[in-house]
Image (cartoon, rainbow, N blue to C red; front, side, top):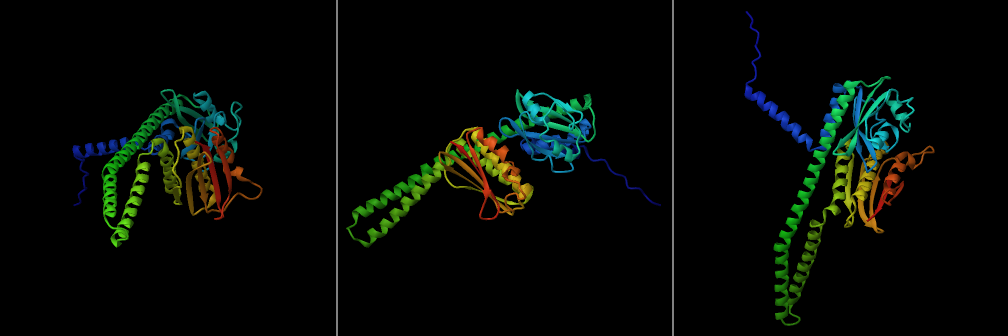
Length: 381
């Protein structure tokens, strides 16, 4: 006689705990912009019926970068920069409304700067929806089919709803990031004040006490010479402390570029496994958000080029003040500049140059002693 094992229903407490855990995970994901965006885009094909989906995230004031591909077959679209007015997404940036084409290859109402990439992926019908929150454009959500078609109400409504959720998620993530940076900055300032009031005061007292002892000893005394050495060391320690206090209390505008570049390095390492290191060579002056965005955007574009073309083992980013501005230098140890008649333009030089030129900056690209490529971006401060 055999018995069939019966699957016992889970107690209500277990179901509740599972629901709470899932909800908690979703809430946490909102504070990570990349994770939240990926989750939203992942659901687009199932909810709208499109074959492929991705999102264009802002990169400067008037362009987006395409990321978070779902169901693509090639890397042709990933990382593309789409300026205002170019292609379907560029038209959406300009007009801030939903647009679609039933056959991208033959559409007459858009430019065809990205026709080769769309053709490589085998896409035909494409729809693009602006992600708008409180009249601010926060990106563009795309859907596409691999056949010529029109997008019905179901697909349109689903994409508009997803675009609304994506815009809200972007706002939540950005506000959380800003709050975290402000909190870190405030903590740094509190630490600086505490160190000044404690360690700084102690070093001053020690230095003053040593000076008084030296003055009380006869000239040429052996102990006087030793105390002089200790006084010098105390002075050096006080100078080092002042430098640290200055760095800790630096305005948030002076540290935000470093925060952005560290984040870019970390994301690059996680994607590629290639070592990326940031070196801050000098103290940085305060910069406008536009200049910070231009430098960090150029760094991201350069890192994307390393990922796609360089075959590098490591990348070093250095940032320093020079010539009345700030320079970010990205150097890799890869295979070097393109050959066979292609110049640095193949590395997206025009896109990076345009981004920097809008804030009065400059771009240089060339080879380096490691055999790789060095991209150097400068903006005025």
